[in-house]
Image (cartoon, rainbow, N blue to C red; front, side, top):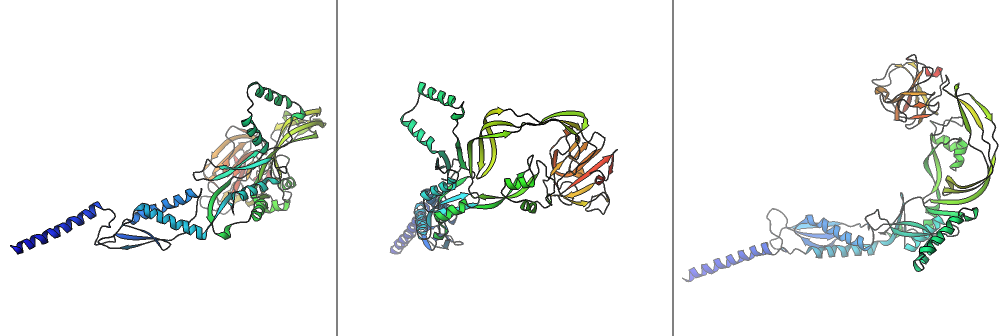
Length: 520
């Protein structure tokens, strides 16, 4: 009987233990569940600091990201953190799992201590690819003030830092406003002008502008030419730039590669003067299309130039008054009986004299455009009158500026599979995008894809000849369109059966190709 009772107690004790263990595993999530074939408890370390223990290592990355987001929100921007995350796993029957909120707090504390020990808080300023770090917001504003100071000597404009609405994080950008407008706005908020008084003020302002005295000469608007981004960040102490060095870096001029589109009246010397460079530098940068000072350039041609520019440019509009002698626009009389290379002057011009108020837009020291807003003609200019022909002459121009002759007309060894062994035109090697002009005036009879010719243009001329331009990258005309000699019709390319960027040019007489070099 005693033995039987003893067995009952033993079985009851074992059952109680099993029930208790089952309840622990089912009800208490803070205990790691045992597994014979894999680790079930993981210790998480940030830079060798134990931040907690978990049973599911896949949750750790999310906990780290939440701690980083908390750091970023506190610092109004992106904070770069350099840390080592390691985990050590083990198999245990019973193991304590830490609460996720506690782990996040521990990770956050380690991040904060790491920032405090190794990083310094800065204002990171980004202008295109250029970046500089300053210690305070006052230094940021002083840097921007100095960047505009050359063009705002009287400090008539104020730079404000405002939130950039296009960015998700707290990124600041610039807002340049006229100081007087700010003061006027503040005054209106205190003493608002309404009703009859407001209409009367508007009337006097409008009446004032009808006379020369009504113009407010000087800088009308000013802003930065590039987008400025400012964020809070943490960097190593040696990455912080002094205000003096930052001003020097932002305002100094460095030569930058840009593209200039040739305008009517331009020459190489004029282009060099406009862009603050030399003719020699232009030729060096455009050797294939402009081999020497005698090379022909046409309106619409693209010329590479090196232009000295600061990292942060200033765009401003100035209202100026000047007096000048001026020429009237030339008046042309078309004569359908003459060729286009024949013209006669019917009236010589006489310069006029005028008083002008104009808005001129500058980027740094370079005038980009002019808009005349007031003109008082003292003496009317007499225009030059020219009678000119409209018929295309029986001559042909070379369709590109520059270029290197790489394949002549006639028999040749096929340069690539699919190419002809009898070349029916001439090839000039030239960069993709070179302007292609009509060799002679006429009507476009085909414009588009032409098989082995790639993109091509066919022009029929009044004397029955046809010119063909092949391997183009872009066609700028359409079938049925009339074009003048020298008019831009396409951009050179490397399409169709082609061995490299070039222009293929043909002249057809009575439907058969002839040597173009005999006609140019």
